[in-house]
Image 1 (cartoon, rainbow, N blue to C red):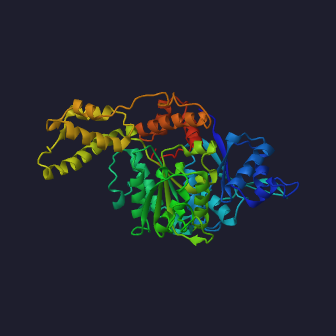
Image 2: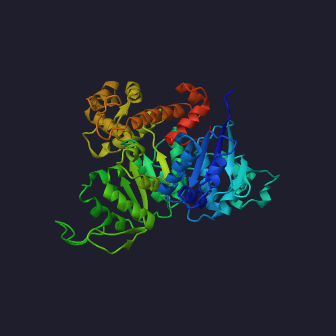
Image 3: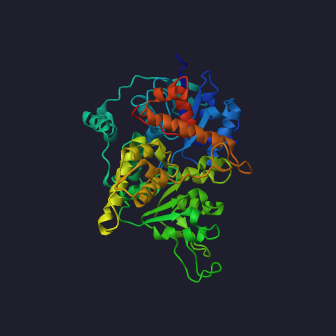
Length: 510
């Protein structure tokens, strides 16, 4: 039996920051005091609602002061509208703990009560006695580190309504969540896609930024539209922008608008995409392609809800929900300096990771039948077009192909095959002839990427690990013990730790 892990979980408080910044001479602060005690933790999981860079500097000081290795200390940004909003703190902390990759039955949790507001401390106590059993500690200048131990029966009569676990609520939680109408157009059967739809439906209700990650052709814009239509902003503008198609010179003018004469060719003023999406949603596809100066302006727009058009000094207020998407590994781009870390954390309040089609084996034929129905729907209006069906051999080719272009490639392959096939029933050979085999060149493939300035080996390794962990989790229906065995890990705790380090969310159905 493996050794039980011990985690310390805490907010980062103002006193912690001030001690790291040398503003409290002779003091360590609550978190450092706890880490210098007799108890040694295998992981220190810190939450911050302060400026992320400031808290990151605190973590660097903390590691140096206490001797804890960097990989043992993790920092996560939590965007709170108020540090005394009990309901919001409860929801945000619960979500963070659900996504933390806690080894089931194999971790000893300790919540630190001292850093943060009294509301934050109250939520730790509540969670420690209900959803996440944990030990409680506190620190003070007078008494140092103390264990908090008292008998406490948190009866449902004293819980707020949104925390009560009535039989009716438990029944609702056990039942699969209903798919909202806006998401009905996303054809799926596999558990991986169902999980992302569930998360998307939850985040749709909050007017927070969303970051959608996934390969080209996985349906990122489809998800963005569904989130918009399921949100309180439904009926307001939905503006989609492909950031990769905007020239670097015009990116700021396109997004934030410009005044007449602001640059050569600006013969009239233009409001820009932010103003066009006012009151609604702005979808920034391929946000990783934005130049750095545009990233700075985007960060300000998200933080202050203000923009300044190019050529103007007048600040304009905007009310826009931003949904960003990219096929790139933004974490690797941050490490390489190609994408601002503060912007990444501002965008990644809600994160969705759309699985590639090759990991959605249960969905390939479902999508194929849907697409063939759409293609055949046009047949009656064109007498020369013949109704086509898929043979068994055609279906076998579809399920064995890797689909590097994902859902978009599947649709166009079926459309080509239906045009070229001479018989009413398309054969496997017809499908194979319609597939476009991309040549493998020196710059293609995970083992043949060009090495030069900006190359990030760790990012490549993380990409490979992320890929195989996602496949293993999907193929075992999110049973972590089985997935760990498939990957050759000694136990599921190792898999949990790797998922946490890679930022992979954990499915709660296992």
